[in-house]
Length: 324
Ligand SMILES: NC(=O)c1ccc[n+]([C@@H]2O[C@H](COP(=O)([O-])OP(=O)(O)OC[C@H]3O[C@@H](n4cnc5c(N)ncnc54)[C@H](OP(=O)(O)O)[C@@H]3O)[C@@H](O)[C@H]2O)c1
View 1 (tube, rainbow, N blue to C red):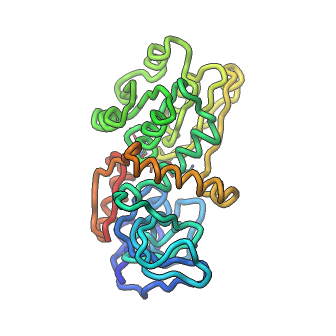
View 2 (view 1 turned 90 degrees about the vertical axis):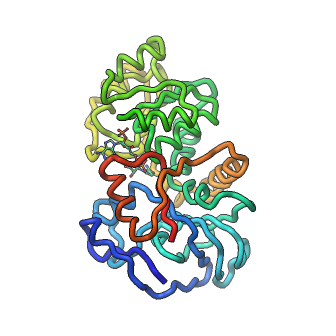
C-alpha cells in the first residue's frame, strides 16, 4: 500500500509517499481502509522530532482516520469487515490502510460524513475533555478561545456554544474570525489589531471571562489570564506559537482563578472508558448535525506535506483532511 513516510526527523519536505507492506491486524487489533485522515498540529511536531515522544524511524504519521474495517484480529467483537469506523491510531493514518487497537476503533452511524468523523477525535476530543472535565464549563458562562480559527479553536467555539456558553473568539485575521463567527461565536476580537485586554473588559463589562481555552501559548496568554474573572479557569492546551509563556503566579492569586492543564492522550490512557464515552457523544452530535467540523482543505497523500506547512506557517483555518 501507499503511505506518507517519515524516514528522518526534520524537514517536512523529506516526507515521501512510498510503497510499504500492507499492515496485518494482530490479536485485539482492527485493520481500517482509510477514507479520510485528520491533519493536526502534533503531526507537524512529530515528523520534526519536536513532540513529547519520538517514534522509531521510519514511521507513518497521522493520529486519526475514518474509513471501513477490512479485517479484524483475534478477539475483536464490536466491529466487523465492512463497518464504517473512526480510529484513534496514534500513528499511521496517512496511509491507504492503518491498524489500530480495537478499543480505539469506534463504529460510525450510517450516513455520517467520513471527513467529519475523521476530524473529530483529536481536536474535538481534546476540547470536550478540556471544557467538561477540566474547566467544568457551565451554561451561561463566558468562554474565550484563543487561536479561534485553528483546529482546536474552531472545535472550542462549536463545543462552547453547544454547551451553552457565550463564546468570544480571538484570532489574528478576519478570515479566521469569520470562520469562528460561522460556527456561532458571539464576539470577535482580532488580537493582531486590537488590544485584547481592553476588548475583553468591554465585552464582559469588566466582569472578566470565566474560561479561557488556549491552544496558542503566545504573547496573548498573559493578557488572557489577566482577563479572567473570579473563579476563572485558564486551560493550557498547547503552544502553537512555539514559546511556553512564563507567567507570574500572583495573577491567579489576585484573580482567584485556576490554571488548568489539558492532556487528552494521557486522559485516554488513564481513563479510557470515559474518553470513549466522550468520543461517542461527539460522534452522535456530529451525526445529529449539532457539530459540523470545518474542513477547509482536502489533500492527496503527497500533499500532506503542504497541509503540515500550512499549520506551521499559521495559514490553516479549521481542519485539513488527507484522502488517501
Ligand atoms: N493538550 C492536548 O491534549 C492537545 C491535543 C491536541 C492538540 N494540542 C496542541 O494544540 C495546539 C493547537 O493545535 P491545532 O491543531 O489547533 O493547531 P492549528 O490549527 O494550527 O491552530 C493553532 C493556532 O495557533 C495560532 N498561532 C499563533 N502563532 C502561531 C505560529 N507561530 N504557528 C502556528 N500557529 C500559531 C494560530 O491562530 P492565529 O493566527 O489566529 O493566532 C493558529 O490558528 C498545538 O500546540 C497542539 O500540539 C494539544
